Structure formats: C-alpha cells, structure tokens
Length: 231
Image 1: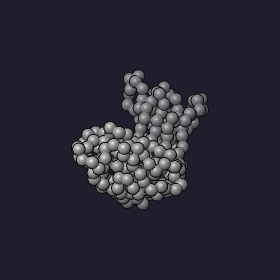
Image 2 (image 1 turned 180 degrees about the vertical axis):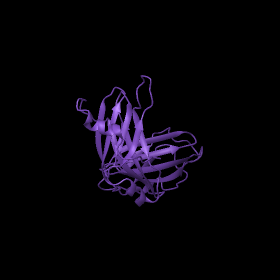
Image 3 (image 1 turned 45 degrees about the horizontal axis):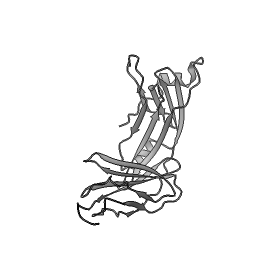
Image 4 (image 1 turned 135 degrees about the vertical axis):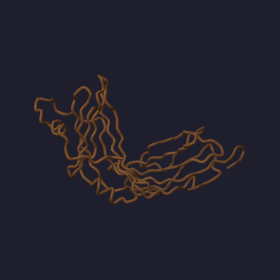
C-alpha cells in the first residue's frame, strides 16, 4: 500500500535546485504512472514504475499534481553499496474507482531522486483517468474445456485507437507464466508448442494499452484436454 506523507520533504527542495552549484538533474531511466483496471473483477489500481540507472537510487520522491507527496523513499546506510535500482509501487485494488482517482488526480506527477553516487534525477509523467475499451475472447472461449495443447492460437475481438495488446497465460500451481506485448494491429497470438500441459487449467488475461499508457484487462480460464484426448 502506498502511504501519503506530508508535503515536500526538505531534501526535495534541495533536489529541485536549492544547491545552485550541483549539476543539473538528469532523467530517470524509467519514471511513469498509469491507471490499470481489471474489468472482469471490476477493480482498478494506480501503478508507478521507476528505474534509476546503474548506480541505484538512495532517495526518491513523487509529487502529485495537487502538491502532495505520494511516494517517499530514503535508503538506510548502505555502507558503500549501491542503492535500489528499480521500483514498482501499486495502490490497493479498489472497486470504488472514483475514490481511487480522487486520491490520484489526473495531471503531471513529478519524480525526483538521487543516486548512490550523488547524481540527481528529475522526471515528469502525466496520469490520465481515461481507460481503453476491453476485448472479448474468441478462442479459446471464456471457460473453455478440452483445449488442445498444440497449435493453439488465442484470438480476440479488435479494439480501435489503442497502442498495444498484452496477453498473459499463467498456471500458478506450476509456477509458469507467459507474457507478451503485441502491436495494435494483431488480434491473434500463437501459444508456443510445449508450453501447455494436458488436463490443466490455465488463467488467460488480455489487456488493451491506451496511448496514455493505461491498461484494461479481461480475464478468464481455459482447461486443456487430457492425455490421449483429441480436442
């Protein structure tokens, strides 16, 4: 869970340029914020992803458009070791989407950090509340059984005005998963032969990615045919 902490810590002001002799901040390798919804479960979450380069981060602050500090991290004494290189922060999944979007308003979020080497980083990323439309499953159908383990092509209905699709196939008990990002023109994904096992239930999710980076997922399950059973 993300904790909302008081407005603007003291080091944040320093990172913005109070020390005029410090070098100008450089961009983060990654600094983004997006809204994700699971349309099947009817919930949503806000996701922050930050990557600070080879040295790793020892300080990180993210400021919302209304001036609140929504993320604040300071590494303890690392005894000469590098800081934390990569972060992914997720809010709790909320069914009350209005409450979530009120807490994380649309607009530009400011990312400010410092590396273990003392380098300062600065980025901005805009959050939109606009979510893309969802797909419908064609093959396998939602909850399908007796699905063949070879030559399976997952297909879905096309969605207009998106940037990409994300497909995920998981079997949590076996600890296996497959994730792929596909261009917006594709509506078919060929599952690699050898990935699926006979007589097994899999979780299938397909996400649409908007041009603003937001994602809408739909989920279902399918079960493969047993050994020796022809689909």
